[in-house]
Length: 128
Image (cartoon, rainbow, N blue to C red; front, side, top):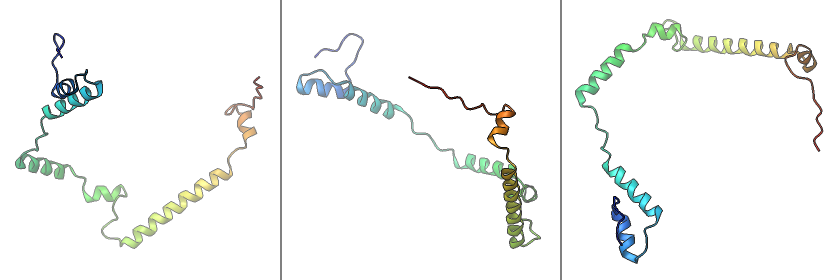
């Protein structure tokens, strides 16, 4: 078979075109072109060892201090035992739970929300 002007036959399409005397399928051409694109892509090069060390050193310099982590509640303070920190966390969690339960109990009824125009009243639409 002849290639149309401006088009080249890919190796995969040449095999299918020559092998059985038929027109190559779009699927085989797509697979062949994908393989060619993948083979043409360069493998991402790793940074040289010295550059990686420099990046690591920079990251270590930018890292938050232990005091900052303690003040943000990420790490327990050094002077207090871990059990104390865990107990404090569980007490804070319990306090938050109590607060949320109290808010849910004092939640307004649906009719109150409709009256305050927060929710729309029920509409009964009959569709035929």
